[in-house]
Length: 234
Image 1: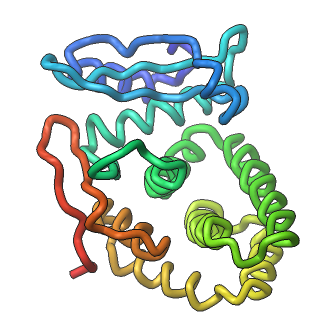
Image 2 (image 1 turned 180 degrees about the vertical axis):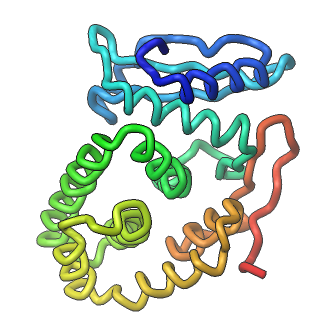
Image 3 (image 1 turned 90 degrees about the vertical axis):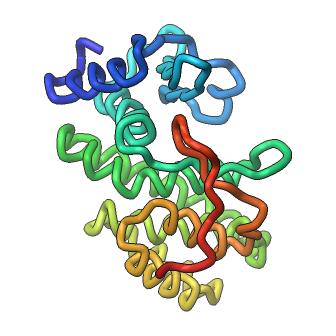
């Protein structure tokens, strides 16, 4: 944590005070590393003492400070700011659930990260561009794939808000038009603006626009009972 600037170290101390214990450091499991590459990850669990936060680092690597800060901001989002986490009522979480939770959080976290580490803007621009290239390739073989549609809708919303000058926005819009989902993208943006920054409603919007069933999900808060997703924004 010593590589973090003083403002970020203050957030670490606040998280640890709220949890009543230090943030743990663990090696990133191999299955995580296969899915995420050499990026760190945050793990938030709980027991009778309260939240337990672990920072998982790829073995043998020292990630850049902005990556560590990004994961600390994820912990701050849940532990200090009280943001809910989307979870299925029954069964194991699906990949789309993790993607929805991450992107909903990234709407606030990435601007904070860039504000402290300007170099993070180039990192996220490149990361999103790699995702776009993957979507273009997937669209060549299966343009009607619902998972592809959902991934593109989230990428459009996130990039338009956290990287308003993203140089690949035009290419993404061309893909959206080609797949005939421009109305969906515009409707999701309108619904997001109507949500007014309320995370519960942002999660609900993603669930509905992904054509999932809100009744299959609850929103979990740290040290709180599950909450049903709202049917619409007030």
